[in-house]
Image (cartoon, rainbow, N blue to C red; front, top):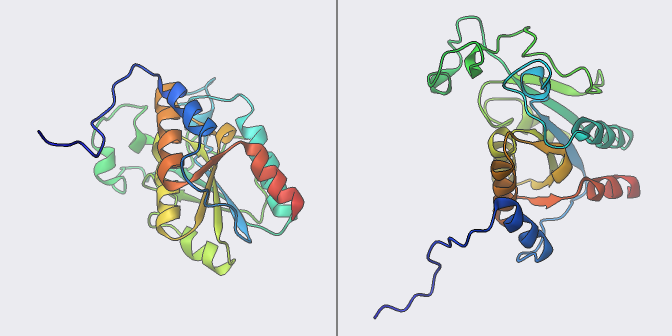
Length: 227
């Protein structure tokens, strides 16, 4: 009989939220921690995804999400640390959306977020400073074919704080790329949002176990205030 040393897939009836809470209560791995200088990378705070009063594609998890993001962004600026805002958008014929834009074609579809449209616009609740970097991306990660990596290197950043939505999509992709590029990666819980708590908590769990430190936003506030 074969001895099982590894893990056969567990099916025990726990919800994604329950698993997340158990993992956070009993951390199994060391933290990456904060380095010397961080950047706040705010992913896709555009109306298509934040304005639940306007668009079917929008979603909300913590009603104070944008307040938290504005707070840590203000603190980072005050310490001379970069703040970055990304969003998704495409040209009129969606010819730059690639294969990602081929699964559906409705007014709500991803590739129909056009440059300069209401869906492309940043949420007006976001406090975007004239000296913040902001740009449009075409794919999930805020790093993919964008100026982000070189911008962070120039500013001698070693820690990336990723906020935004969706937790299971563009936040996750950005966090994985941040780690892949060699940055310490922090994901503040209250600053992320998704359409379903299962997606949200399952991906926070996976990020915590593999790619990032998933922390209460207060941990970021405390670190910045102590600098």
